[in-house]
Length: 272
Ligand code: C2E
Ligand code: CA
Ligand code: CA
Ligand code: CA
Image (tube, rainbow, N blue to C red; front, top):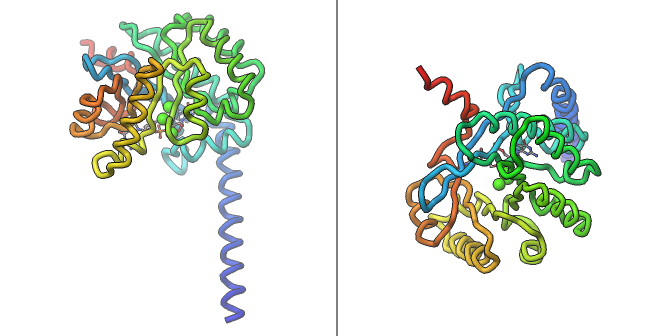
C-alpha cells in the first residue's frame, strides 16, 4: 500500500510538472504568435430582439497554434494575463477590430473585450484614444466589454476611468453579468450602457426554473436602471421566444450566427 501511495504521489507531481511546462511553452509560443501570423479576430453578430436587425459585432480573438491547432481563448487569455502579454495582445485586437469596423458599410458597433489587466494600465484611456485616432473609427461605434473583476480592485479609479472613456463617446458593457460579485452595487454606481447576461444562464434556461428566474431578475434590473440587456448564448428558437416574451433587448449566440471572419471580407466575397 505504501508503494502504491508513493507511486500515485509521484504520478500526480509529474502531472503538475507537465501542466506547468505546457503553460510555459504556450506562454512562449504566444509571444511569437502575432509575428507569426497565427492570430486573427472573428466577429459574432448581436441582434436587436425587437427588430431582428444586427446592432453590432463582438470581436473574439483566435489563435491557430502550428502544432496544437486552434487554442481556446479560455485557455490562452488567462496565460496572457499572467505574463502581461495580454496588454500587447489586447491592443492589437482593439486596433484590428476598429480598423475592420471602419470598413463596414453600416453603422454597427464593434464590441471589444477588455481584460482586467488592461483595465489596470495607467495609459488605458490614452491607448484607446490613439487607436481611434489611428483607425478613424468614430467613438460612438466602439463598445468595450469589461467584467466586474476589472472594477472591484479599485472602484474609485475604475469609475474615473470609465467616465473618461464614456466622455470620449465610447459605450461600455458589463460582461458575464451574474457570475461575479457585488453585482447590484456595481451596476447602480457605474455608468454602464449595456448588461450582458452570462451565457451559462441561457444554456440552462430551458431546463432550469432557477436560471429562468435569474434571467427575469436581470431583465427587471435592467429596466429599473434603464440599461438595455443583451442575452448571450442563444442557441435555440425556444430560448429566443422566452427572451422576447420577457422583454430582453438584444441577443447574441449560435442561433443568430457563430463568430466568423470579418464582415467586410464577407461583403467583398459576396460581391461579384
Ligand atoms: P465572452 O466574452 O463571454 O465571449 C462569448 C463566448 O461565448 C465566445 O467564446 C463565443 O464564441 C461563445 N459563444 C457565442 N455564442 C454562443 C452560443 O450560442 N453557445 C455557446 N456555448 N457559446 C457561445 P470564445 O470566443 O471561445 O471566447 C471565450 C472567452 O475568451 C470570452 O468570453 C472572453 O472572456 C475571452 N476572449 C475572447 N477574445 C478576447 C479578447 O480579444 N480579449 C480578451 N480580454 N478576452 C477575450
Ligand atoms: Ca465578451
Ligand atoms: Ca460574456
Ligand atoms: Ca465569458
